[in-house]
Length: 282
Picture 1 (cartoon, rainbow, N blue to C red):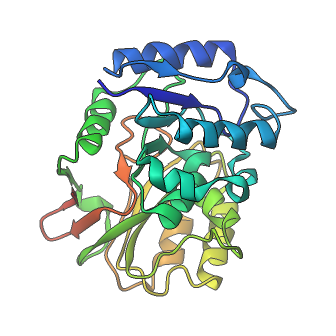
Picture 2: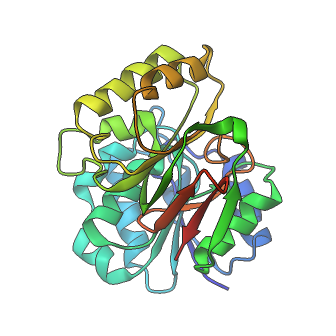
Picture 3: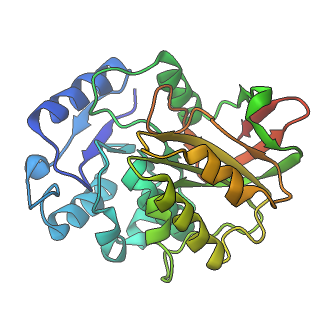
């Protein structure tokens, strides 16, 4: 059983969500769980000030008794940490990072800086999870290939693509633009998801990514969940992507809804709309 270092790099982690995290990680078959005593700190919205949080991430990677760094929850705030991380130490640690939502910026920054394994996967602070969520997480951790069926109605642009996969929450990817941690998408398959955002905001954020050149050389696009958005997001998405030539699929089980399948940043993904499937290949 792999041991865990649990971190709270973003929003405040309540006692309830902390206890849920401990119970779920044990239920999911992990071993010892370490964490800092300050994990329940609160500074305004955040899980303590940015210094507490970036020190927590560095300590998690430095710890010699654990193999996995697990984000307990998302929210906002991870962008504050990325300039203060010890990437040389992180690279040498060989650890796996798991999280999604606001952790998007940690996953992509650490992958790009170190080539370490970073999994866009479930965070343990909630009460209920689909069995597919957990089985896919373990498959990704164990480097077992997996395949996902596509409903024909969810194919927006037909085609075949094979490339490394990167991506995450749109709102967080936009935060990475203009600096050394900007997401690199050339010759990649890009996956995108979002929650609690208006369709018009998503539309503008996609345009911002486009203006930054993030769609110029993408090989394919996988769109996950767009949950709790108060406008017809699908209409905005269809309009934005209507002139793209690469394969594009909608409504895939990635993001803020169950099941939430794990996406290993930087691993090979294959989209084949003729076979109505996409795959992760290790």
